[in-house]
Image (cartoon, rainbow, N blue to C red; front, side, top):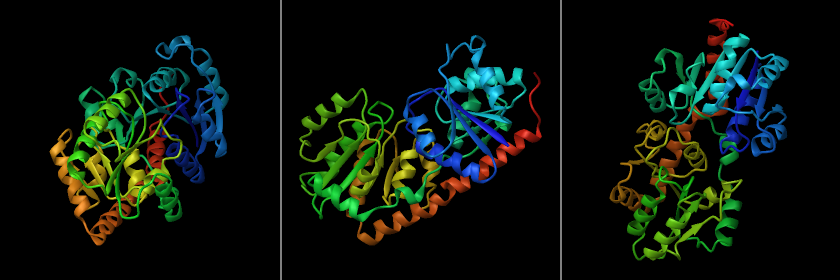
Length: 360
């Protein structure tokens, strides 16, 4: 079985778990080839891991018929299946798939217009929530399998030496407790809720810190809010996106994801694998990850008071309770390993191939 993974992009935040999954699929007998735009971190990550990679820049992603180079590239690779990420890739591969006689599987991992996905033969959704959402837009439920995103647990397992080094270099004392939020600085991630909740939970205490890792259009607004709330000495914010978030996660004690809209949450898996007790909103797929198994605390999206209460609860937990929550999170992660996810994905590939190729 040869699978062509096509993504119409060059820079991807989820490149590491995706490449990890491709390598795991390869170990299970599915030959992997990546097609992406040239020059970005997606191409570099794949080539560094030894994944066969082709690059291509479409003429107009929104108009598949004019991209006559796409079918020639696909024919030269001769895949059994084309598996896409991102809506423009789904539209391109779906339109050409029927004409080439190659089935197309589209990953559903964000809120998007259904029109981009209508020509795909099958779908994998990163959560039940996003599946239900796309079904409400007209996609057929029976054509959608839920296959979660994966995380490399060993890669994110806490390094105590790196933790000590990070905290020392950022002036975080041994007795101080640090919350961390990771993601884009935009309205969907709701770091304004996190900042306001932290101001309440930390009070006048000098023993708590907040780490904000990311960048985006609301960066200036967040800096202003931090100043207005008198938190400048308590909040450490990155200058932009960081290539390796692990030292930041290892330097923290608790993870908070207050998103108003979160179809899944790969960053949540990375925090759990880093041994962090977590507080998440009840948005999208986050509750599916926690699943009321004592792996974290769920608070209503947008509710500053509820998040402040959850953060205060975390600060009041003893070491045994925190370790228990972190242990529960690690147990929950067994469903999100590259091996477990690859097994499910192989099942989807085999099912699609049994159904036969679409008509030309």
